[in-house]
Length: 231
Image (cartoon, rainbow, N blue to C red; front, side, top):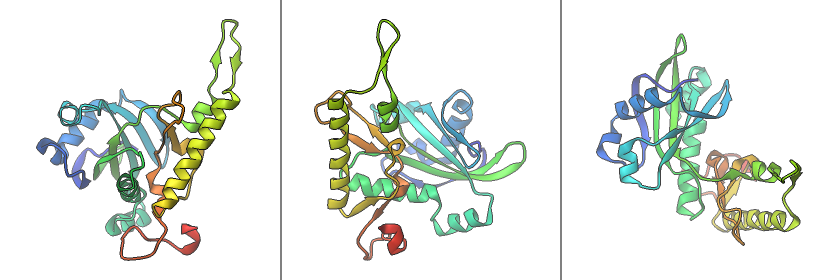
């Protein structure tokens, strides 16, 4: 799916966005300009994820945000339409999960805007688009699979010490999540990003925030799902 082009509205936005970024046309114009030349991170029938250079207004407001990530998902099924009305679509869950991680002090891609609108490909369809900051680094899966060729073209896998440092970093992340009443229900290596692999204690960030949920029941709107799902 392609990002929204017409009848776009902002369903959610970060509170510290510059005034220009509070207008949906700011985002639709930027997406129309950059989408086709953007680097695809994932292309599936149910979702399209691309890395794009941040608009100048965003770079001025947040100098470290040189790149952004846009994830587009369709809203053209009855189930997705109802989820959009109830604000329970996967991208809505991603937004809430990212906020929960941020408040817990755990690194994740900060969401900036969630848009809904109509695209043409070639027939009109409803879509939603989540724009978030880009996290530097490789996924844990890519880092473990990567190898550095030597002068003869041979490749060596990560050393035992490197694997041990990454395993300890993942264990620290799980401990911090549970200590703050959170759980990651999909902690596969492709959903974790290694931010500083050469550091003695690498930092691991969570990129699939939609899989994070609050463990304890209560008045918090994040505390949703069956006991089996939360487990």
